[in-house]
Image (cartoon, rainbow, N blue to C red; front, side, top):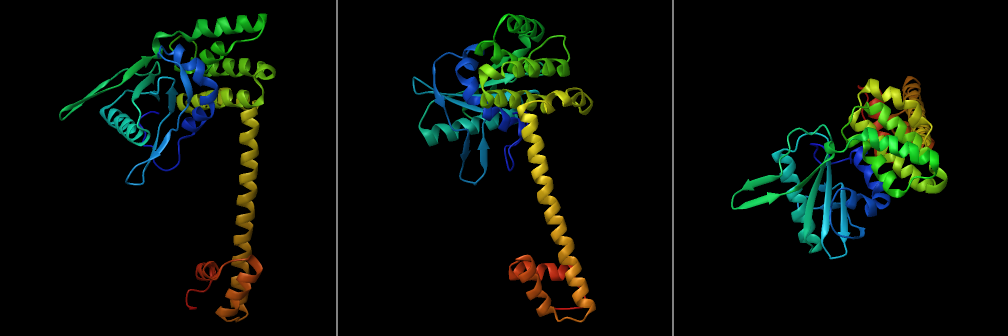
Length: 298
């Protein structure tokens, strides 16, 4: 997704989209003009010989046995992107013994679309799906009208999720805020799990497309979502963990320094650290070296 290497920690927006794959699959492919009937969600993470993770955006197994591989791009498609997509296809085809076709879903911001890569004797191709041709403004207006009259269908909801990728005159913060509001109103019919998945997709697009100033405009809307509450709770738990860790480190430092001032031998200090802070011998020795008098040796 974007011109990023899929190595190490998986980008936030990729993880959010994966969480929504099950919800989006049946309706997403027809909306994008991709033929065939989806059978199931297929694996999106492979490991090749160099022990380097390859992480695709969406993979769908079709009823005819082929796989459709989707990538979302917010900037131009480069040669490096095509090389990366080709590597994905090669590993997927080899590992699962399947025929793979790649579709690149391009946002309205993509200006240069490269669909073909010629190297050596081979020509590699992907199918670009341009979202710029879709106007977000009438999509939002239609969904708002439908919601006033009743409930939105799944096809409407898929359109809402893709609104940030579309063209149109409405600003991105306003689009995302309106979509969040409409998804929230569908909570009863969607259920908490699917509501959180949809909010995760919109949150991912907000993080991807909005500037810091624009994010502030939709911050309150995100805070009021199920996802916002989950993020808040994760932050609280992480803060507690960091606080405990920081407090323990200060305690270790104080013990080492006070023991040295009293002339306690290094071996006894190590034992005290192990007993009081449940450290391994190696951890206790490392803390002693870190906080102790540099002239003292173990």
